[in-house]
Image: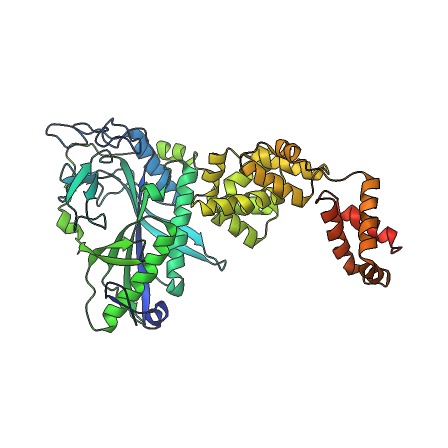
Length: 509
């Protein structure tokens, strides 16, 4: 048993799994990218001046009446369809009553027992090639709350803060809450299943075009519900809910940590408290928030100021026709088209390069070349800058056309691979297009046969022992002489041509 820095005992993941089976339930909140809020006409621009995008409706002022955002409803239906859900022919909003400073109405307009979509599933692929089916209980519409900023203190939370500020710009932004059914049977793969599900869901929502799904900005957030069942039991344990986990890595880490924490509590004979918990990215632990409320504590009742939503079958089918190709199906098709191995495709997906490579191949590059140049130096530099490759490349002004141009310089015989890497580094350093960089640096393969032959003769004369080994049949030793020729020509000789000339000079066929 180990202990965290705050003194809370935690069993190792392996010890916990020996005695208990983890059960997960994930709640993912997705901010829709509609131009206006869910029940009023206020803008939804991220990062605007605090409290500059508010009105009587989203501030909950007396007498203000809400109106449903049609685009928000359409997006909700498309999400439900993409998750293989049933779409309700009639549903309505409800008031979820609780007090919190960042919720100006003291209730949240949400859906309770009548969600817009329900009973769906999403299949996710794991690293070993297996598939886990995540059952979706519901995907319902609601509005987001405002945002509290706690000033002073060291944690950014209300405890220890000097004072708090509230920004209501986010209050009323359309949300879809996607709730899974209890996820059982994952065992040691539970953390990976959680991450794979959120990742697959993010890809799906991005393909639908309904959200920018930027977890770091909060437009996609995951609440991780977790409990443990003793081995052989069928009774669900008491759950904890880790709130607002905002990265794929953190989702996986939060599940792993909570498994160990729950197991330590149960192993000591204590009772797991049903509560919300805060995730700490820096330390990789959770800490207690507040006791978790049950549904009856929220005193749900139908929203009297909004009419029910009743999409016709024709509307639903018209929206179904707008669904894009499933991201997982699309990746398999692209992998086949590009000829990538499973490992190569997995690396491309993990690096977020699928769309960029697709654009580059469409522009005229080979699939192998597109993968090579985007996943090499660009990915390394992006990782150093803690950015994704697409964002980093865009910030440099590097485009698929640059990759195509670089490949053409290689296939035309002007550059070898070593030169091309130098040119690409120059492009990334802002020195211009690949051709401009090659011209400025004087990079060009030696095509003068006389110059190459002279360099070969000098290298052979300077390395008589190596030359004799090659004459005696140890042809693999030619590599050493090729290296010397490349050095003598400042890397501008063609290695294949240099090999041919060396062997001819030594009389080796």
